Image 1: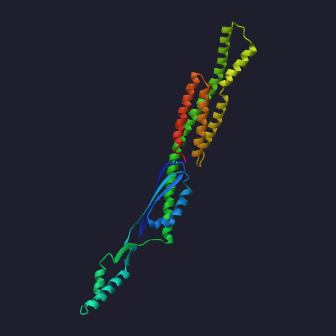
Image 2: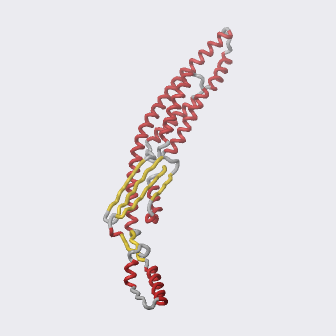
Image 3: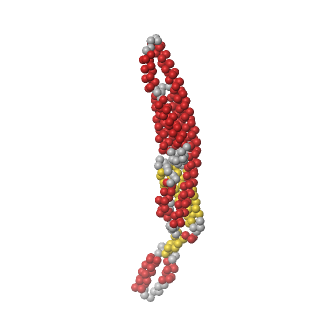
Length: 294
């Protein structure tokens, strides 16, 4: 069992650049991957998403990928020669036409233009080779492994809590089953005694049994108890599964809650209703916990 809450981080560093990957996740009904990364990583987006999907199956995933240059080896000079040629050509043409005696030194003008950022830029090299892509994916993979370990650790804590709740619920089912048997026998004796008091002992045994059967059938909760036993067994089975069980757990708790509500509506006994309240309280606690189960 895994939680949908977790965090993972990986940092890769060499003489050229530093790659930082941070991934965090919270509960979500489906898998929702949100990527925040620089444009040079865009060609690898599909591979990154596929890598995450192989491990993280539910939850809102927010991944942050940052690339930082660590040396001057990634600097490159970009000279806009087309603009320089255009500028010098127009200047030469203008001087020749209007100032034929003026001296024109292209080299001197070029030196001045090289100090102008409109004509010369120092930029970061765009790493787009295969090695860069492999390093990105490897960094993401390690971050995913760390968040997966985090989600597994958190899932074990949830599993421990759910195991306790499951046992508490089982104890209540057993208590209710034992009480119902005593309650039905006691109810039958009291019902028969009241009829004897009202009718002076002149009771038709066949009619008495028929009326008793009708009353008991209306309040019969044995079928609901049997289904609850089955559901509890299924719950305990799911709690030890390694694959994602969050959706199945959610559906199972809905079914268990439906059976408990039916028991409450059929029963008039204060003792039974008190047990029903305790059952519903435990199911609500379980439901809150499984909202975060993958």
